[in-house]
Length: 436
Image (cartoon, rainbow, N blue to C red; front, side, top):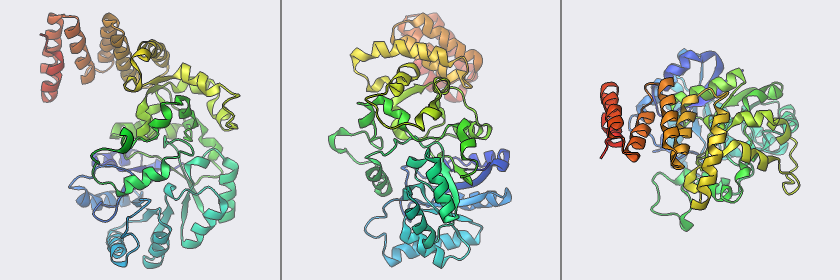
């Protein structure tokens, strides 16, 4: 079973390739922004252009496919001009000479042109081609696609994916962990916006959430999070006969989170906070989703049979009440007390099987503090420190709690511990722990 993972602008991620080379099919990275935009709004370091040859070399050493992303959904008014595209072609040819194996493309004109002009280059269709039908897939095959990535919206329709595979004869790739809403009305606009945008705008209309347009939906229907068409790690056996490769959306993940996500899918098992393996900026609306509750309620089996008759079924609403904690930033003051009380119950339940107990103890600590229960908040932060003495966030929380309760001596002890163990981060933590 092979996965593709994306570059997160942390060169240390290349070390992870050594450890998981037998499980990684491809390593993808975006074309530099001076050529064209991307399907993700992620910053690129000034050194990124010089890192790409290192990435390609590393992939070749490990027999991992290097993949250049051309997944913008709109290249602007110059996108089809000959000079504009020639620069892109020249860059791909330059990378091919040093070992680039594959390009992931969303624009069908580019698919055809790359296949014709760069012999031997594998072309993979982007998930942003939105392939949902056999007919669409056949068109892309005729244009030159070698590997077809199906639209995330049909992820759970295994019979349709199999039909696409049988009719086209192409290798099929499925994106596993993108956290975007199924059939999201913002999707096309969102990706076009990201493809053009290299700098944050001054102000969006209607004070909409930048790069998180789906929050407009979650504000009214938080249970819609369960329509997100991710594939659970333990559900991979359902795809064994129809998928050749699996893609993990990881370009916004820190390296440690990429490893957590990769391991979950390699071992086909995960416990704890579902948000730890899903990727979508709109999911910031949620603070925690206890995946164990979903598993106990046969989530995957139920959701694959969903007929969207929500007015007759309260399955997702029940899951929301028992598994989901909403980020208090998006709650009205009158809702916060109830949500924090519910959060404590959900966090305690999540601790039983979670792989990352430290982060849950920190969340539990904050929930207690939000209710003014500082003794419990301190105890939870202490638990986090015992599990990971280097968890600087726990010390910061302790300092703030002692400050709130005017426990100056205890705050001083926290400061002293920080001075001894966190000299490189001392200043930021001392700001939390300093008692008045």
